[in-house]
Length: 114
Length: 223
Image (cartoon, rainbow over all chains, first blue to last red; front, side, top):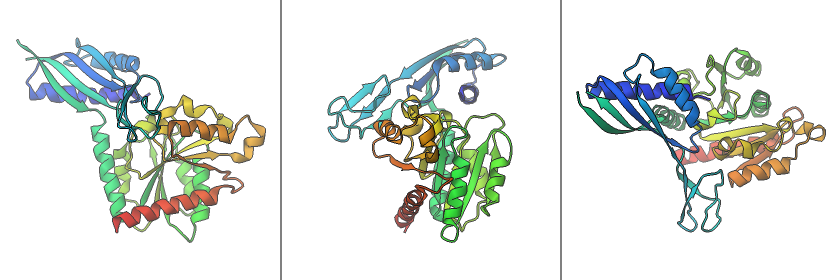
């Protein structure tokens, strides 16, 4: 629901990086979005399209890499990757797992023209 | 003209996380327990805070930060209980962010025990934003239905306690407190579950003791 404000933060990052690298255009943006981040990739895409007009990223291609939820089990030491909302260890069934990945929203990579 | 690819790896929530860490440190320094309340609109967050204000009177001092899209209504209700309250109106935003709390924190009296933050009524977005609280409570009222934890797992996953509210309505609506608790516990083992009726006072003693215990633990870690 707050995808537009997340995209506003993406553009702060883009403007900052473009300035640092004296770039004229941003041609590609890669976002890493955790499956449990609360952000919906399709909505991020629409928000990006709405936001980019009139910015140096006007023609940029947006790629969204969804990061699955990765759990670490303190009981057996195993790691489990989950697509669905099941927070249990695949090895021993423990539910005391720790989420090590899958809640983040990152600007991973950008392609710039200088 | 040259094209280059840069790995930036910049966390979009970094600004919020940093602000939340600052608030958490400040609250701990002052010996105040921060409690973030999450739930749908109308599940009884303000009513629960009014009941806690009555329960804590003479024993603990509390303050409340209210988050809503519009109006000062909730802060006014809390002030009628003699409790200092600040209203944050987000003007449309679906959740509170740490820097909004940071702006109010300077006005919060130093000599309080609990700072309650009543988040914008929404079971989705507030779950993703750390406000620097020590304790997160999620509320679920009987009329909402006992099937909500599995449908909104993030809110329950991020919580330390679940408060099943409006227990006085259980005889009239299809809501099984045990089922709601079991569903939430499947998502978050160890979650403390409270069944309360703020209207009739049931379950409030246990919740108040839980909060008092959390305050003691926070202060003994500091000492």
